[in-house]
Length: 123
Image (tube, rainbow, N blue to C red; front, side):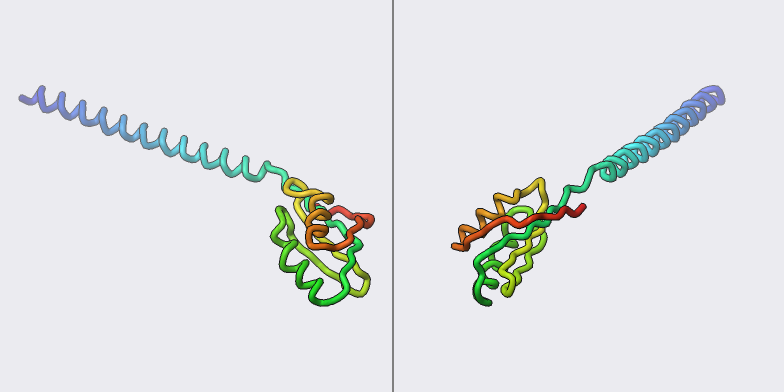
């Protein structure tokens, strides 16, 4: 009987040790996966934001409202500024989502005469 009990205790101790090792292994794997996920998210480059100024035939506040209600919903557009006095529309957009020509076409769809002015880039 004592031999059988000692044998059972030995088996239980081995199971406990095996469970302990499995828990440690799971913890190490979980930490490794988390580390890889965090570092890969930081490694991605942020998309460039381009700011383009357009000469546009805006004449009044209703023209400004029309642009402000439509252009922000174009793909990638981050901000829109309309200057009625200088007849300029400045649009910032993500280069991976839209283009200078794409925004120009969107303004032309609103029935404005549009020309692209010299531009500056933001990061």
